Image 1 (spheres, one colour):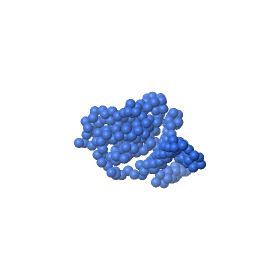
Image 2 (tube, helix red, strand yellow; image 1 turned 90 degrees about the vertical axis):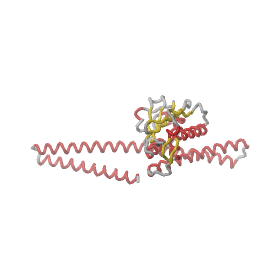
Image 3 (cartoon, helix red, strand yellow; image 1 turned 45 degrees about the horizontal axis):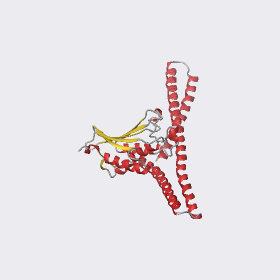
Image 4 (tube, helix red, strand yellow; image 1 turned 60 degrees about the vertical axis):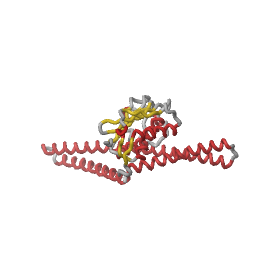
Length: 299
């Protein structure tokens, strides 16, 4: 579907360029034959305006295509690295176990590292497949009432276990909460993916020490979750682009492993649930805050 859309776009702009060339040639011929009079002047101005507008549109498209290709190349490099690194590690440990006698302690350590590499490999593959799925699927499936505060607490606990963090490094804070106020309608697995991605990003992009807060609250007809960190931050110019597919921002963030799909998946799932997510940051080195908003189920 994406390939067809892209081909249609390319065909459209090829036709546009051809039309601009034809208009320019026609305009020159028209002026050579009839260069006097108000009519020729008006027609010339209108045609020149069309040519300029077409050139501007074509230039914007070319710039977007160049950016998209750069992001696509970065994505391919990131995914290749994310796939090759754990595979190479698994092969090395398997060869070591096969060719050398190792102690039981070393064997267990090898198994632990191999499990970690296998999990990393699985996570990368699942993220790529999930990105394709959220683009293609907009249907409501398995939607049930979900207490978002309880789900956030669950995801915080899982993130602490996954990253081996203390409860002081990451906590969940209720704000303005009568218990039923945080109920939303949605797919619990998809919303768990959204929250896990936001929490994992907050940890990954806090290299100098993890301090993450997940606040949950309700106002008017919405439930919101705000995940804040004190990490590398986001440049103001990248705040609107941070949710684009394959986009990764900042020199500090480029050092962090990833595919550039996590926030794209977050945004897609949020919109599928008739909500949204926004990013805020005071700049690089000053942390970031991501706020997820979803429609509240009235009790």
